[in-house]
Image (cartoon, rainbow, N blue to C red; front, side, top):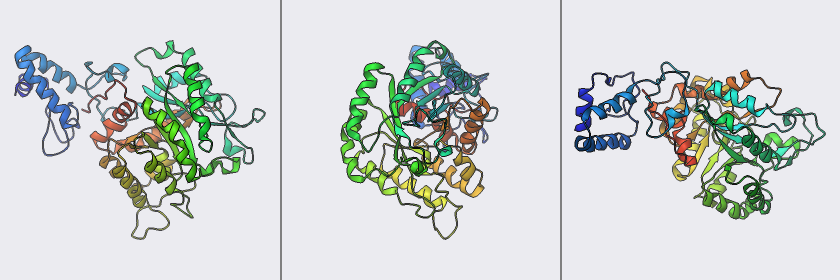
Length: 427
């Protein structure tokens, strides 16, 4: 009651309307700019009751008014710090790009990367405040002039820990550059594991932790099956019986509260669900691990879901969405990554397909994380990164405010990483 009275006293606090996303979904409504979930709103009301005894109602009114005021200027880390006066995110006046890139390869398969300080400035200008620094777990031969495996069919690539070490040193070297309110807050990812040889993984994890203590907070992108690498003698399906031997490194991840991202193709146009049993086996064996299924549940260049129709063959978008839906319901620790510009080109630009995936994100707003899958080779300009960020963020324009705050503004990512940040409310 005290909280509601404080709102009534504040002439500056706007009220909910049909086009203001700060109102919570459903039959009830809360003041504009309050968090979308009812528990958070209740928390503010409870604080208001305490404020009735401990502080003037005007103080609470000021707090609520600040939350309801649109953020002005560039987003910074201060807008995501818990307890900071930060305002709300106005979708109508901003580009609705994700502020998190949970899938960014900061080195290529071969050749030179974009210099780390330059890449950091790209991220500043793009509004990325948090990101996962992926290496590439496989490298082209040192005498190869290729930077991308698809340009060099027949050239073998081999698993390597080199990129992970290069990435960690780059972060150390440019620590001062990332210490401003623009960040970005970087999470280093272990991309070296060769899942066919799990006995090597824990010793290499310990090596990284010895050389760079506490710096690695993610694992991935790990290839369970990646058809695009077949021509480079990699990416073949991991045998099901070997997955049982993953237990030591999966236990290590659980103990350190580290999520793991798997690239596991669903299938191809000829056999759409050929490889689905692989991911199902992983989820069955390791239900307590934080697992991220990359590329919107295993989509690839070899599999392009068709628009929904009455007949479902070989694979249609609504059937693909149902496959993801079923596994999200069955496995509460499973998350889905939305990285890769091909999702935009093959799914988001088709109105019928787009509708299917918007509905899926709205139905499971706490189970998806954003990313670009950009590979930062020195041959690529900044404009290419911005294009891929724009394309992979495009679907966020159509999702609900609850989904937008959780996915694009990073609330799911913060929870998955156990970070002490919180997404601002949506206006």
